[in-house]
Image (cartoon, rainbow, N blue to C red; front, side, top):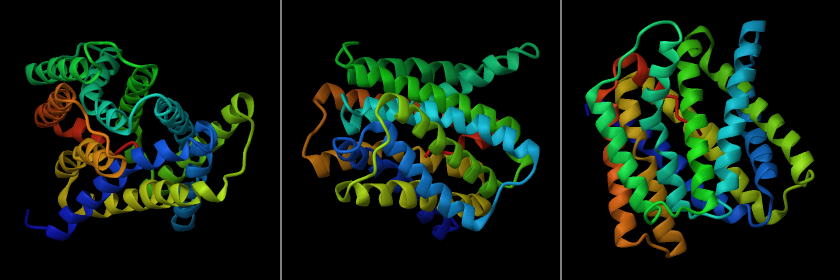
Length: 291
């Protein structure tokens, strides 16, 4: 890597994204999931809106759709953390990299024939095997299945962005999506949980996830991507599940079983198989990480 600062920035972004799984796992013991998502993304949106503000009807339309997809993704992910571990959540969320090419093919077939490479199919099969081992032979807890739905929502979001993000200023477009995510989460929270103010015990978690990961990690990613390109960005950001599993082991003292570590390894292998097989336009979309 010739541009070492950019590479290190991407590794830092991956770490910020990865450690959030442990942080969120602890925080939602005090603040219900959709309340947490609402406050987290409100902070992230506020910071990015200082940098750039959305303008134009098209940006507002596309940003609203993108934000609603993020509401689904982060809602399922955070709700899932109530009954699954942070390591499992991070690894299963990483399946979005495998699912994205499949969603893209389905999207493309709406307008004509579309094909998928053998390496992507192999990666999908490897990921399927990894999930089998990680969830103890398809006996997953509810949280695991909710996290799969989150990965699907993130994959749809990525494909959606790949068609539309180039039309908009990136920071403003992302700020709008974060704001919509926050608003949508608060609406669901009002119906499902009741709106709650965050207590002092979750302030640190909100700062880490809202400012550190959603805003800080994203800005690190954009800066680095402008220097090294989307392909390198996507590959380095695939380190996120590894950071999630490692952080869970270090912070909580809980480790995956031997079977689980093999499953985790297979999922990470599948991610890199798919990334190496993905054509540049699709990798461009994958570089917009769902965090």
